[in-house]
Image (cartoon, rainbow, N blue to C red; front, side, top):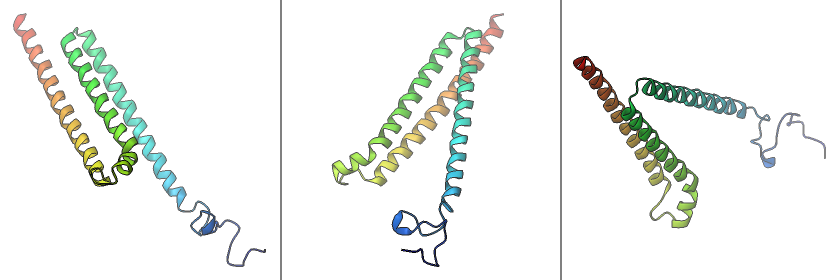
Length: 146
């Protein structure tokens, strides 16, 4: 069967999984945006890793063992919260299908993710402020001791 005069060589028919338009026309922009988003995540993660490494090095050089212990506990809690959030994202569909939407629906799962995000953001902010106050207090004590 010969191709109709309406179709061009680059078009993918809608019945073949395409959307009836040119192959990849609208998807290229979505792939570009997704790639940019992943690049931003990678840069953010690398910056966070550098911040953690420098903070640990600073605390080791200054021999601030208690603050380093607090910082390590903060990182452990952040890891646990991230793991819980990732686990919820992975098993979300299974929980919705298993419960048939009576207790867990998509809106509930979204609200749980938002709650975890805000809880961890407030916890990190509070811990960072208290860590900073402790460091300032220790500097003032050292001036008083000398």
